[in-house]
Image (tube, helix red, strand yellow):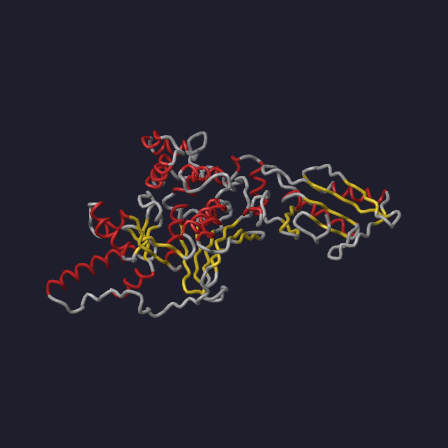
Length: 494
């Protein structure tokens, strides 16, 4: 068991002179993944020293165990050291506390294990664990959201999600005929007395100004550190608003390639959009909400992309085992259930596997997962390490958009002028943050949806000026359109 040095589930101490430190690790094991404490073994050298054990030693150990709360009976083994008569190794093993059990403290302080280090459990983590142990009614997402009504929710988002759920067989077809009030109730977003939960606000609230934690931080940095950035944005809103904003940021700053398949042009990000969307969805869903200073972050560097959220991995998972087949341990079960029913989130812990599959298909390394006391983050490696140049000149291979003033025949000039005007209006309406079909039709004062798509949307997707948020599902109810690099360049030239 001690052929290697200390690990997430193994702590070594030379003697009971370090008993207090050892018991802090026992507390951390209880709150994390369980583990062994061996007293009488030197760390690093792994030399088995043992120590003399008498009644005073046993009483001292019992006194320290009594400082663990809730009260727990820990079995202790005393193992003779060969070749050292009278010397023993003291071994204490603990199982991890259950997912819904109250967190343990030692000497009135809670501890957790990060890799081979024992640290004080952050206050946010402690209160979240404590509330979870009291039942769902104490979790932030299931508490009553004061002063909001059904009218404050985005009905289009609710019904669009329900339609997806019906199409995928996750919700009954009769849901399409339900009132918004009934849908919200059936999605378990109301309390027993009909009041809206915080989960409803996190998912569908139109005006989120009373929730500063509904925040997505986005930055594009020069190089491979945070010393300098080219773009630094913040978006506030509900889950869907933040998901759209994050995907728009990816489309803005990542390279896009395209190819013609049949009669349509397929746009692909350098890191698969489906992998980024799944990772961002996980971050927005499984984050801590109760801390008003918490947030989700996107950082794009020359060599990598990082998506982080406040919180920690479930005690049942590590940064390595999360890549293996595992059960689902949602931080916010109510929110996760709604996203599953509306197809924005998969169940049974399969999301990470799909992210890795998408990266492998794109010939990219598997993403890396990391965590510290306050955040969890996933890192995607980029294929290119070319420095980001905000004023990169256009290469000859990039098609140029003609200026409306290009001399030509009078008839052609008018036609060209009208064409460029429509393109400029469309690209301006999409802007840096993207836009859905309804917004674009209003901006260009068009009412014929089918005609608008065939005249404005499809040709410009094929030309490579714009891309879809959900290219694999063109008729997705949450479909939005974003400028490609070519589109942004065209807009600046028009």
